[in-house]
Image 1 (cartoon, rainbow, N blue to C red):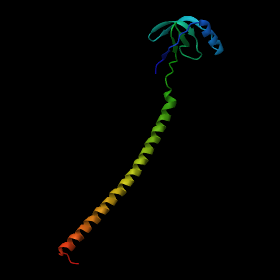
Image 2 (image 1 turned 90 degrees about the horizontal axis):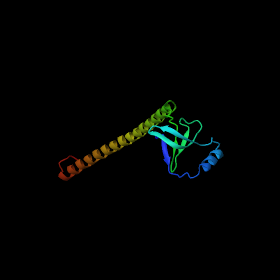
Image 3 (image 1 turned 120 degrees about the vertical axis):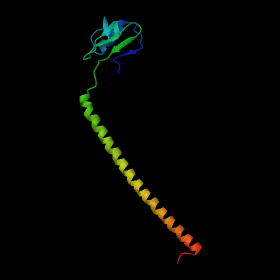
Length: 134
């Protein structure tokens, strides 16, 4: 996931940005420079509370919003993911067991019909040749 994304927007009036910050209960924007991974960018800076970089940079024709680089909390997600995978594995094993039972029954039925066909063919051959004792 990227830490910086760009929203195409034109900022013509810094006073409008200041009014929006006031309406959103954010500190007033200041002109400044922010150092990013790719270099420095200069423009109108809005500090966002509880963000690592605490800034939304609005340079003349575009603005870049800098998000916090919060890595996913593997400690809380890992057990949940393991539990979901184990439940899915158990579900798939149960489904496979059901299909194997059906398949076994089908094979037994096929064998039963093959034996019945072979028995009837022997009886027909015996009656047609009149060699078998009745």
